[in-house]
Length: 161
Image (cartoon, rainbow, N blue to C red; front, side, top):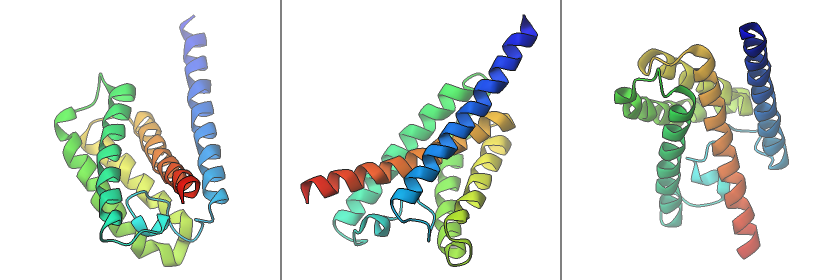
């Protein structure tokens, strides 16, 4: 019975990773963001200047990102995560993605999301003490949320513009 449950858990985990990756690839392909990493902390991707409304969008993205990151970490690793370091890991992810994305975008375009995912997994594994599988799930779902946040903003903006 335990072997069957373990096999089901592995299959469900693989299906979750594949479905999330497929949705992420479809979302990126529909919006012509293949020349840079789709991060919702870059107001230029949605056509906003850095000042004014772009600043409000940026702070809203920071707030939603933190809430989603905390919820994902709690949902997938509540029994093993070190929540005392979660805020430091979140700021490390923000700083790392803001530094890696402009640095790597001219060279590897949308694939610059892969080192950012690697950074997320490393920080979660090293400082929040989350297992590697759960860190990968949290990191992929967190980046998928960022893409869907951008898509939702584009949809609302096109409807009311």
